[in-house]
Amino acid sequence: MIELNNIIKKYEINKNNTLTALDGINLSIKEGELVVLKGASGSGKSTILSLIAALSKPTSGEVVVDDKRVSKLPENFASDFRRDNIGFIFQKYNLINTLSVKDNVLLPLVPMNLHVDVLEDKLKRVLEMFHIKHKEDAIVKNLSGGEQQRVAIARANINDPKIILADEPTANLDEKLSFSFIEILKELKRRGKTVIVATHDPLFFNLDIVDKVVEIHQGVIS
Amino acid sequence: MRDRVNVYLIEYAINSLLRQKYKSLFITIILTALVFLLTSMFFITNSIKYELQSTVDALPEIVVQKMKAGRHYDIDVDSVDNILEITGVTGAVARVWGYYYFENAGVNFSIVGIDEYEDQYKSSLTNAANNLDFSSSSMIVGEGVKKSMQNSYYKEYFNFIKPDGSLKKVTIGGVFNTDTELESNDIIVMSKDSVREIFDMSADKATDIVVKVSNVDEIQTIATKIKLLYPDCRVITKDDLKISYQNIFDYKSGVFLALFIVSLFTFFIIIYDKVSGLSSEEKREIGILKAIGWRVDDVLKEKFYEGFIVSFFAYLLGSFLSFAFVYIFNAPLLQNIFTGYSELKTSFSLPFVFDFQTMALVFFLSVPIYIAATIIPSWKAATLEADEVMR
Image 1 (cartoon, rainbow over the protein chains, first blue to last red):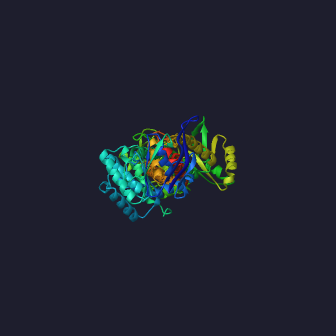
Image 2: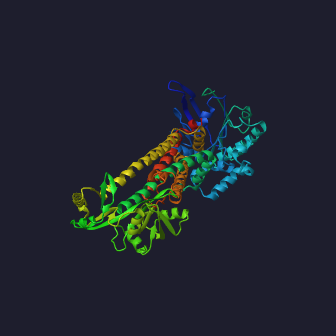
Image 3: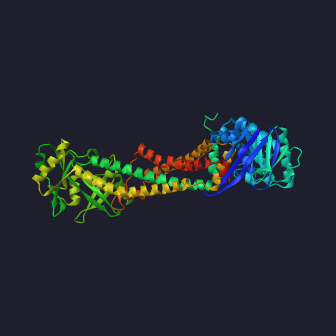
């Protein structure tokens, strides 16, 4: 269960000016739901994802995930929370372009110092699940946009998180690859993941797998 | 699991350095060069200090030189008997020595004369006396002299040109060995008679007189007594010689100090540049790592490994190169700062002196400072919100 209670998020532009990205957001998402956050660029969708992932803290209000107030977590606990619970698929993938597919996908597990067999098992599972096994040793910068997204999805799932957050996942994809991504979403939902997609792509709004579409406009739920 | 050494983190650090190979290579080269320069200066300083200390230790307690018109003149050998009568003096030897200019190599040799049955004022001379054939014109030469002569095809003997223009043929009977090359390198030891012949000195004259004293506390008193006995002589004590050696050494150390300061200054410019900020790409990477679940301390550990690998490698390589430069190649250029550019001195090898403190000093001046310079900006970026860093 994810709850956002009366969230206000302001960014300081300079000493005299602030930008209100979110203004009194209240949102509740149940476990296993697939929720689409709909809105134009700059509406505050990505900020909501960022707050749920504890990548930033709200100016006021609180974010609660599974009864844990993640918006109040100290820095290192927030990192642990992300590692154990969140798989984030960024709009620009945020991969390390000069590393191989394998190294990128394993990156979240590096600090955990797991046994090599465990790493191999996890790697094999996600690479096969997201059909990128054949590119395992390829350098990421040499991959196509669709392949890079699969790597980003594989990385987001390497630790089998309960929550998947996707920020504008189809912004850099053509129609065919966008449908392919929807197939991946179906698979994730089938596996019981809670999925939140922030997008302005109309492709997502009438999908039968979507449980809820939340429209954001200038930092407020419409 | 987290307590074990995390090899994946080390592997990531190595990959990270390899991904920025030109930058990493550049920093490693600069650090290596600085370590090399610093370590070389310390190695040379230590070796020359050792050389000078050994030389000073071997100096006679008192030297008496006859002066005339402000210049050093030959002294009467009879003076030895009068000096020996002074209470506290345990020995006095009339030395016969001088410099010989070897034109072929453009160097000066020091020729020292010894007597077979005389007490030598230095243990190294005693060894030479045991090996020297006094029955013929023979000499024991230092390594540098031997090399210089061999280069001019004098392998078995050498013809010294006497002041009257005639030649004195002396055979090479052996090689002179002492603890320090600085002391023995340019020395030729032969009988006093041969030296007198080469320098055209009469049998009742000597170059100077060295005096041995039983109690070191009495050196100054005895020096004063000799001065009273021979007011026309210059009486030099071991302390006077020590001071003049030390003055030369301190003056030349100043040049090294200047080099040392320049090296440190360069190093701190690099450090300042690193501390002053990360590139946007580096910041983004830290943001990504945090976004996928890395803790601040994971990022810092990784950066620690990066800094340690570069700086420790540079430290080892710089030290190794410096060792080879100083002790194998004999520190070309740098050594000249201490020994002078003059061609009037035969070349010598620096003695190997390992000083743990020197190695520790260079280590602490390079490795921890560089690691700190790597970690501090990363810590600044890692403690910001990941969202902010990526934006």
